[in-house]
Length: 490
Image (cartoon, rainbow, N blue to C red):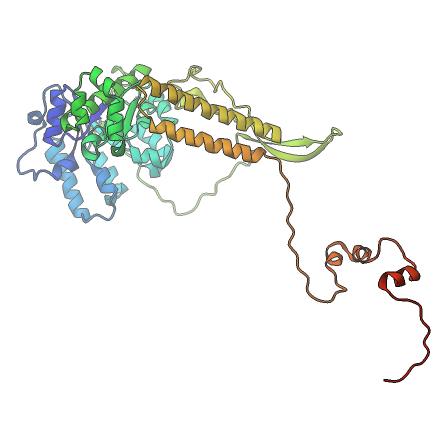
């Protein structure tokens, strides 16, 4: 992969890259318009050294990200005409590639019309996520250079498709405006343009290559990160004290070196789509042979379409099985997850680093997980806890190797482990409690026990446990036998 470091429209950044001997660079035409009025021709040969390989980006991503801009369609067309005629064409011999002016505001028809004038040997057409995976495959069939933006990757997951396109077509894939290292690592790019190396100057970040990994710390962790990697910075030949003092030049030099090491790491793993030597099979066609989309043809009537009906089946990864009762008979159908068996190495984004990757083969691994009983759930919870504990201990070991500087990532993983352990403990705790709150209003004969458990239970609760005699009852209540002598009216 060729990493084109962007921002060279700013002279100080351009000079730094030239002094450090970095030759694959990118320039934003839209960013340049903000700095110059183009009163005279802008000649790349005068601004860059003879060895620089320049990728010119139209900068339309900035326009497309603000659909409610103050620019009218006429103004955008004038800018596009200046970009093609007054900037790209005079510098065609000096630039390596240029990105089309794909202003969405002007419509798909205008973009398609402009593509007919582009030379295929240097033009990069940009894929739009709205067209889907089919649109990307169609672009790769008709154009030798296709650009994919970071925002496009975020909108539609096509990571699995990029290795397949890289292997089965002669198209060179370019990542535009890339900001995420994971996208760069697994994209199978021929080239990628990024301004992320400038984030230490723009946002106060710290970028350093250490432990075969590109570390990027935000501004609030700046002091901790630079102290932690002080030995690495010194061993790489930089002034660690200047980096700690936030010297802008030394911090950018460190960032530039770190991105170079990251690029070498990617290329060393073999995940990059290397340029294929020109042959009769993959030679670029001449510029005038640009593929054109057929014109839309409308018919007066609607042709009926016969739809072939096929047997329905569950989606891959799901299966309906019959639950078997204790007596051996089938009781009811239940839904289960199974290995879909549809993943293959040619379309897997991990094929470049997977030890079992084999072209034209299905995935060699499966995940035999079943959670149907409390015991199975407890086993899965225990496995997850063990996995998280392993991550904690690995980070702890890395912390010791780097001099014992407190690692905030380790602290976060420790907190996550404790939360997981508490959740598992609560789920496995055996307890039982019942709380009943009830009130009674109304006649005494509609007792609470009768309401809850029935009339018979209520009568039984009101009755005495054993029958007693009248004499015993009189003694208990204090009454004695007496004879009435005289009854006088009150």
